Amino acid sequence: MDPAVIIEAIKKDLAEVKAALGKKTFEAVSAEAQQQSNLLNNITLEIAITGRAGAGKSSFVNALRGMKDKEKGAAPTGVTETTMVPQEYSHPTFPKVKIWDLPGIGTNEFNAEEYLTKVNFKDYDFFIIISSERFTKDDTNLALEIQKNKKKFYYVRSKVDIDIENTWKSEGISEEDTYERMQSEKKTLDIIRKECYDKLKELGESSPRVFLISRWDLSKYDFPLLQETIEQEQDKIKRDVLIMCLPILTKDSIKKKKAAMESLIWKNAMVSCTVGLIPLPFLSLGCDIGIVVWTMSHICKVFGLDEDSLNILANRVGKPVEELKSVIEHTPSTGMITTEFAVSLLKRSVMWGAITGAELILDCIPVLGSLYGGGSSFVTTFYLLKNFLENAVKDAEKVQAKAAEPKRRK
Ligand SMILES: Nc1nc2c(ncn2[C@@H]2O[C@H](COP(=O)(O)OP(=O)(O)OP(=O)(O)O)[C@@H](O)[C@H]2O)c(=O)[nH]1
Ligand SMILES: [Mg+2]
Image 1 (spheres, rainbow, N blue to C red):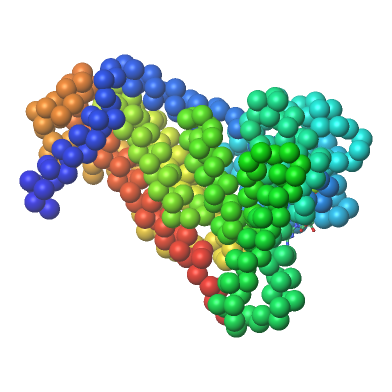
Image 2 (cartoon, rainbow, N blue to C red):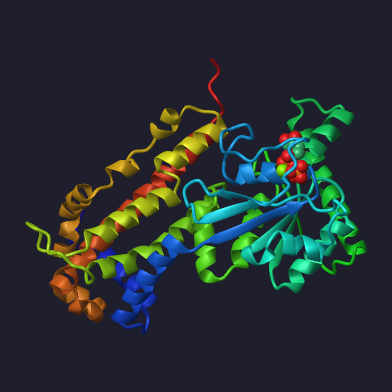
């Protein structure tokens, strides 16, 4: 590539970093980055799933974790499998994120207040109230009580796939009539939405919000909107945790994950060039390789490219995991992201630091002058992580496209 073009691209990136840096001092950014990494490693997010018996709570927990109902470790589901005490299920790759399968409400044994006390409502960040039919007084009483306790809740209407199928059958719309099916589906969803809205109004909700879902496909209906709404209503750090751990269901999820990671990588690149710095042999740069390794592994998990996430996705879409892995071009498997691997990438990335030159760096971001090598270590580390992220995004898109392909006929 033409060096002038490269220099322009670097200038643009550095200008973006400079804008993000704003008036913050380097110490402040460093503290922020460390705090962010610590929080991401340690923050807990407790999601409570509640609703009447049989509403689909346990099934929803399994869907969120990308699991089948009968799989080992899945929440037991079905008519005889009533959950009697809160059951905790960890997110498969971010274990500090917990999904709680709460006992069914409306058993007449407890009122809403007693129910919330019994399930230790203070422990949860927000509640999802599921119903597979009409919402009832039990649901709205519970919502009112949750609100009184200054927590957020979301009404979810489950099993809409059944309503849609039933309408197709009753209207005699065959599988071949795709257009008719689509129209009918839309009509059914509108009817359910209105029914839920009217019922909740009647029960005293002033401006009800209901999200329509099917446990069998979270990419359909209102689940992506529910995801988006919950994210918007969390504080910054919990929003980041949600963005990182929630499944990739739309192109938008990848975009959001990328933006969250972009804000993390430049900070981590800065920190890695100051804290616990070890000058690397044969490289005229110093950086804390541990931070670089952690950031790359984190990127893999966030984009579902680690072994566990790939297995879960393969399981969900019923394809061999090897088929999904076959389209990954750049991102190594998590076990391969070691210090040696990071050093080998740094060696390749070192040209960025060299091309940039101290003058250009200092011209763009003077504060970097205090770093090892007058900022060239930062540029090297930043470009390594930036490339890693760009590649992870491309790989994640390919994996999602592969997962979405119709299954091959045997
Ligand atoms: N078609 C369809 N079936 C669902 C959906 N969600 C749940 N089910 C089915 O509904 C039944 C009850 O689901 P569960 O998840 O066990 O319900 P629950 O709310 O946990 O029930 P309890 O623990 O007894 O209160 C199961 O047979 C599920 O397979 C859905 O979105 N679509
Ligand atoms: Mg259950």
